Length: 124
Image (tube, rainbow, N blue to C red):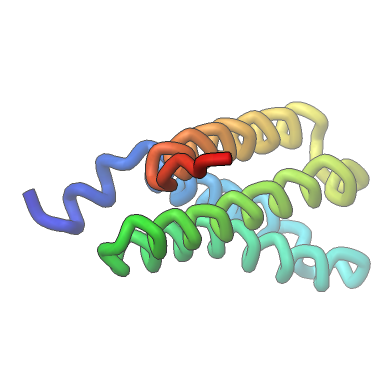
């Protein structure tokens, strides 16, 4: 199995790519609204950062580096979730927000579990 295939089997990565596609679809109609321009750019960037950091960490080939990039990806997923919940509630339907928040929470949970398995246990 190639490195590319292995990365695409990681469910958090597939969900992160889905999140990006959905964010682009959600943000495109809002991009022309002057009140949303900055938020739209930030949302696209944070959604992109989730999958991008998974890719970069995976390419490092070190457990410690991979875990570090997954932590960054988790932060970006948390940022994306927060913007959907707190800022975009003014422009997006509640069902869209709920679906995106759920997807972000799935990604966060998978990344958190993966980070725990990659990091060595620390002794007190």
